[in-house]
Length: 195
Ligand SMILES: [Fe+2]
Ligand SMILES: [Fe+2]
Image (cartoon, rainbow, N blue to C red):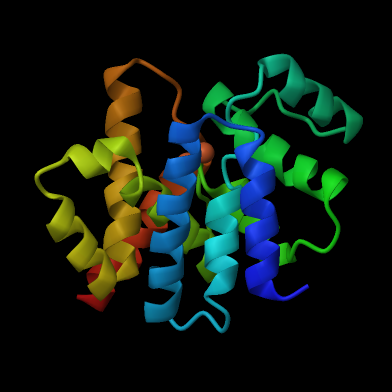
C-alpha cells in the first residue's frame, strides 16, 4: 500500500474508535507532525502524519480495555499513571490489529504522553505535536509564538510541553512520571547549548 493510501485507511479506522472532536485533534496533530517532520529532516514526513493519526486510537477506552491488553502482553503497568495507559495500549493494539505499521510510528505512539530519554526524532516530534494540537494550546494567546519558536528549534517545543505537563500535574497534586522529568532535564541541557 502506498503511504497516502495507508493514511486514508487508518483515518477511517481511527474514526470508528474515537469521538469526532478527538478525531479532529488527531488530524491536527498529524498535520503539525508532518510539518515538523519536514522542517527537521525526517526522511519520510508521512510517518509523522501517520503517527499523529494513530496516536490517540485507544484514548477513549475504559481502563479495563487497557488493562486487558497489558495482561495479554504480560506488560507490567503498575508504574504507569492512568493518563499514560492509552499510549501504551495503543502500541499493542495497533500491532495486534494491523500488520506492517512502521516501528518508528509505533515507538512515537508509545512515548507521546510521558516522553523519555534519548528518544528517536519522530517520538520527539509527536510529543510536541500532541501539545501544539491540543485545545489548551490552541486557546492560548501565545500559540503563534509557540509554533514559530518550535519551528525554529524543536527543543523549544519539547520544553514547552514538559514544563506545562509538570506544572499541570503539580497543580493537581498528581504523580509526575520519571520519563517526563528525564525528557525535561535532557532537553534543558541540549537547549542551553543550542542557543
Ligand atoms: Fe494521547
Ligand atoms: Fe493527543
